[in-house]
Length: 120
Image (cartoon, rainbow, N blue to C red; front, top):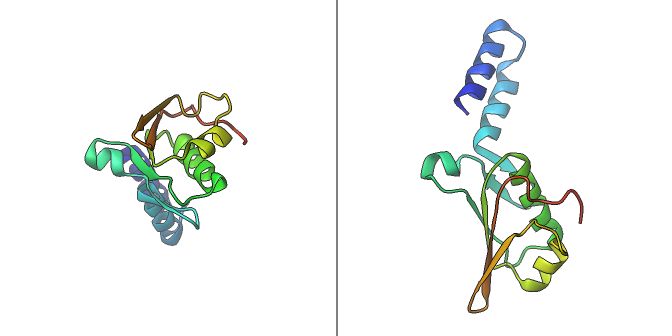
């Protein structure tokens, strides 16, 4: 992220990027608003842990959108409260959710970048 920030500041300095555009790009280094969900893009750097996605109450499309965006950004993800029916819709029989650990009736999945399928 530091290299990205330095690059943006260099672009502002040489006039190839205006301040408003730079501000938007800097904000996107930390958070991304998908409309239905705001993603913390800086969590892993700040805390040492990847993003956690609470899946209960989200549609298959929303979950796929979230996981795809985080995957594209190279962010590790822990998907919690992921209903097995939704899991099946997301991953039949894809490596997208390579580990599903049911603890009681509350499964979670750990995803690594590159594991999200391109389409449902």
